Image (cartoon, rainbow, N blue to C red; front, side):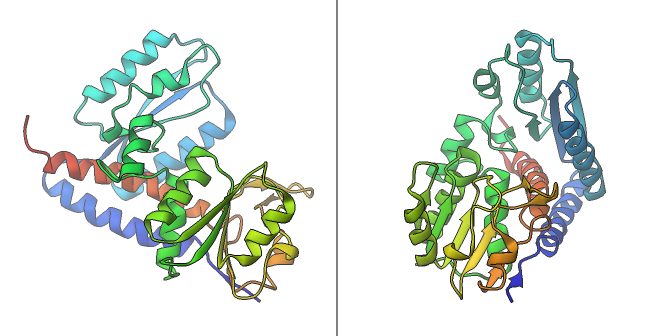
Length: 289
């Protein structure tokens, strides 16, 4: 039976760090502030926003919301993002995506200054992650995976890791972070032959799956002694939330596995808040222009 790598103790550890940083900032008269930009009223976005606001305020982070209907013009949204850039009281920004088709998502997100890009969606912020310069932020889900591995003291240096999925904000970013930790990383994707996926998974010491495909990892992909980090969030045949791994098949075999729900996802929103707070810390440390 595998050990469960639960996300809540990891999240609480991040929250503790955030509270300490917020207290230090408040002594200097600075309240870390997150700007939320939402276009439209998708239920998932509203639910996430509600949770983010609740968590932010519990940690000492303020929130400013910029809400638009789906007919908003690109000019109005551009002006809002430029105002967020210019406002020293807003330290990080979250833009809900996807944007409506008439809005050029890449162009608009590119307006946001990388030091305020709390979710790392801009090319500039991604470039800083690759080159390990600037804010050194990583997309929140990828950063949450690394935070979880560190919390449970799972060594990475020299370890064979197989990442399934190559999306920029998750799979590719996780692979880059693991390379920075001196892991030996293989990446599988939709065009990787199934037999090759099985081989690379079984050869790995750590598997990180971010494919978004329920039941992708079965007993034939794993062996005793492995660590499985399941980033997938899917709806199973029974209508329940599940990860990429067939939990009932994988859990009896491997050494440790993250549950879904209750694993990486529990850490991700805390990472977003820490990015905002860290950006506020840097704004205080930044020499006057």
